[in-house]
Image (tube, rainbow, N blue to C red; front, side, top):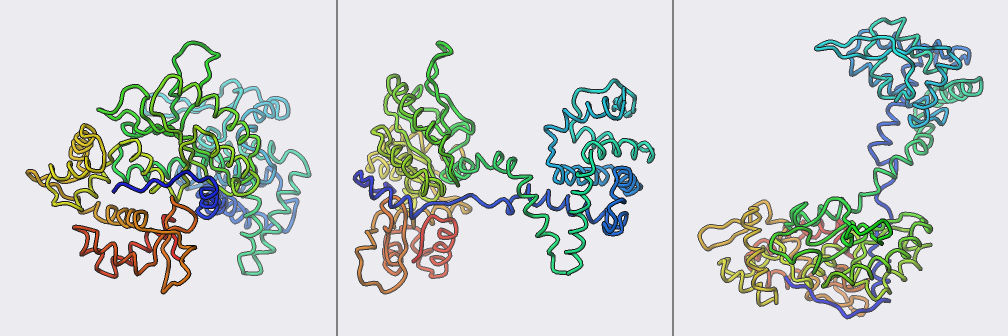
Length: 512
């Protein structure tokens, strides 16, 4: 369904941004990386408890004692179990000392050469179907994963212990490091004796700081991943209708001084039958800041104008959309947000929660027909292919684009075709119904702040201001009257309530 296009209003948009903001994309303790590291560190202290008498004596925490304990623990276990055991030990020692694989892989060989006085190092040699351990010259780097693989492959317990002892000695290099390790273990068991799980509370903040960098790096593309999942739900095909990696659209390869900038999304991307080159496209920059990243944000603003001017000199019909979200833009970076949205070349913006309305609306303005729009046209018509196409043309889509989109939707099985009749796929019915509900809110909603009397809940939708929507009872009445083939679905109060709940859980609507 063609969505209404509101008149430009910066103040309205800024108020909407504040209300529909996604402050963060999850806390570190919610990530799999944190849970994995915490489990490994916890396991290390549990495994060493028996060997150290629950860390009662600091003198039992020598590198030799730790290495010998883990070598004995590895006896009789599978290679996978041994490898996990040694990864637990490495994670804990990195946690205690502040080291990481990135620096230890470079420093450990020098420790072996200068402190342990080793000239050679065991290495794994694969010969046909067997693995042989041979002495080789000391390598310049020893990665943690490679070391774990090596120790696991060594069957001789004494040799395994000797190699582990050097690794532990490198990380617990002085008395202070050993005391740090012992202090943490002693505190772990002292808190564990209280029987309330306090030992995990002791380790959690330390693990948070250990994994913060890697979690931030791995989570940096999460907003893009979320948006791609939306595009797929609308029937767009990855690497055809949208890109999955950054794209430089303004490069002509004429030299190193050429001003270029990568875009997170190009829509449509390489869709067959769409306009050639980069003409008539939506270009999207993604910027999610859960905190203050001022230096990065300021730099992005400075680059944006030059990049856009360069592109507009070469291509026509370009619409620049900013994908911006996060608590940083609500607080310290709010001024940067205003500057971005005030740029004359910024056609619109979208947030995570408003993309199902705002970005779909931009695709409609561009004239691009998605399978979701075809599905809505099928629902609101007899389902005849010609009638469905005519309904889309009446919505002011180009006839050639309608033919392209219909062929695409049929060939990719987004819709079913029997003779001249088109129909929804059963597994798409819920998606189509819930988006129809969003569209009805957009088409019939109003500013609910101006509504002084209310008889029940208000259902709000983004894209048209901070508090735009309908009363729940009014929404039910309108959608059952205008839902076409989905009228029976919506007439069932349980289905209607389930759709409202699902949309609310995903953040696409708010019920107040």
